[in-house]
Length: 412
Image (cartoon, rainbow, N blue to C red; front, side, top):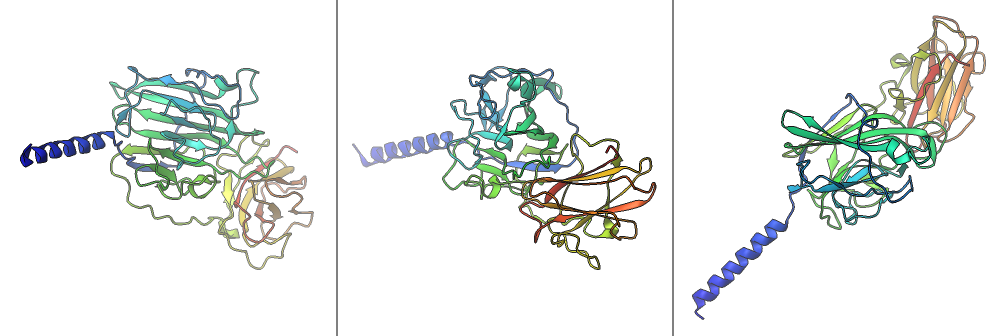
């Protein structure tokens, strides 16, 4: 055989090998990502289709495959998606050979791949519904017309609970769009801080590809690095409960994250957001409602980064992270103030009059501990007079999370 033929055959084999290699490679995860704090949330739990489950474990279960063949044309990493499975732990996978509903969230794990996760944590289906209806009452999907000749697939987790805590109520959706191949995370009521458990959330938010290196490369993983932002990265996401797999500040109620296929955003420059109510003059107004609210959307705050207020006597604990609120009662002289600590936060309440003087009656409360609720109550409120609420963690700094929610109401 001549050298020319040998070289030609070698060249053909090399080109064939390279072509096969290129064809076997999946497209990287590349999206333009935007975050919006305001979105309308429409549940599909009353009309969506149910999933099929072999397991009866409402905590850690993975559904049977939902086939999308010939009914929904969506591409992920450049490949047509044929079906998916849903996990009770807040994610779906296009790898329908998976059998584990892995509660240990890790977007950088090669074992749990082709995952899209709006909220991956150890959560469970709604335990408060009729026996046997747990799955159907908590997870459904629906395909609807969208934008003329296109469709959208909505997948919802509704009334979900932090495992072993039925007082929590987490609602979120994943939307997949035909044609554009866009992805959207939507969050409804995210009531996870109930002041009754010292549990610190440690969730993941994002997606991963079909192939993930031991140390994830660009395009293999997109993991949210800072909560309630569009800051997604591929780094620091390969260890469970660490880095991007340890977010603790829940997604804001009625917020959304949108992923539009295309060139990724420029590197996100994160700037810590310091509390806007760091001092008395900038106190946030809290409405006085008729009864203790069932949820706390719009009333979740943080004292992380706050500085101590000067010229005030110490109430209890160390007020080096105090933040301020104010309220005025127009109809009732009976008022209750509650501060619900998130896991790792030990709240203190101090009530002051409109001259910033601590009330003569007992106005400083620190009776519980981390993740618990502090309660102040009075039947001597002066109508139409302003009152200030000072909140801080009892220890040095803002605790492990800095997070709490607050309510002011007239029912004793």
